[in-house]
Length: 546
Ligand code: CFM
Image 1 (tube, helix red, strand yellow):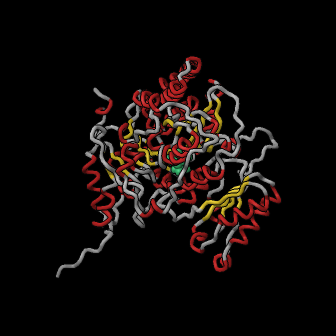
Image 2 (cartoon, protein in one colour):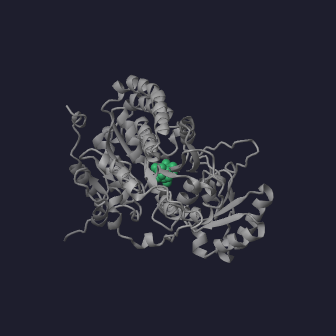
Image 3 (tube, protein in one colour):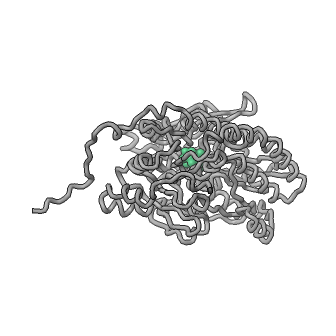
């Protein structure tokens, strides 16, 4: 019997209809397009990257979170000042378990501090630019950093503070790199807009400032790896063992110097496509570095991605080293899988996370013999679901137009074409995913439910009908789901576990999932609807027909 047929699941079309029936007609019509029953042979279109229905209880975050929290947050030697009320800075501070390891105790590390202009009512009325200047100056006086960045929150855009003018002025005055981001929370429909804004800023103000080339034969940048739970440390260990030079990781365990000379690498490997494909494309255009898609979540995926690097460099010595490391690492992985798999085989998982993990983590579950029966992203775009080939058919709406498309040109001094297009074409035919990403849907089973920007109502119903063994999401969902008797694994912060990337990370994940799906405590919990009567309400009042 095929693995896909071992458990009979409810008909996804019926479940979808049940979920939609509760919504007012207008909302049902909108949500319908974001809920797709998957068929990987006949790719279907999914609605994504559009505004959330107000009041629906979304998982999403804001544009500021994507720019400041995600992309620039994990860099230790830059002072990131939040221009806004104190809450924005405070709640985006150290909340994502970004870890960092300064090389020496003297190395600057500002990540333990929270910098904010702490805007007050009077700043909203009379403007906050003077306060911002003072804050930059104060930070400079105390820490003497080489870089300061300013991040705009919602009120800054509403009152029209010119953060870029302030940054230019202070850059001139202090003689250090100061730059600003117009990443107001409302600027896009989710944190995705913030990634784009952050990528633009990195290209404009950081990458290419330092031409010193690091040592090494095989120089690679890792893009879209943010060192949650120490993932980047594990990847650094593997790369070092092989002998690959990691010029920069954007942006887990990173420094500004890494970014400044990242244009000297010969390959960009993109992990989280959603958050950083813009930078990868712009770096290729400006400096001639091709990018390929990789995934280091899952032991097999790690091996596959490493082999891709070997193939890209077309160097037998590198290929041999990669094979040697895989051979050395795999037995420990296999040993744990073999002991756990009898307990996890055929168990069911659901993943509703961010813009890439809902896809990547399916590989880890597969290694445990588990099935992902429903998944979705919070804020991804159609290409993350359906593959990059749909890019030309994505309609640009007013919300996307709000984000600047940076015009990048070849840097005549620094541009060096690393590989001929004909060579890259051949590599692509062999599955390299050069400048490409096939998306999540092509790898999911037929009849799985793919849902974009899932609401609480929708996840509750999924749990009720499919009874998954584990649900993966974030802290906002965690306790609601657990009260329904289903363990929730956080895939944003890892619930203080991790790392989960690479070989050792995979072992950590297998053990954590084994404990979660095997714990009997969940079966002792009963959902309220199992024992109590409950009152139901309608979203709309039906008109009384006389
Ligand atoms: Fe990329 Fe991320 Fe993610 Fe993301 Fe995020 Fe994150 Fe995430 Mo939380 S950059 S899209 S905006 S992999 S913070 S490190 S875990 S939602 S799936």
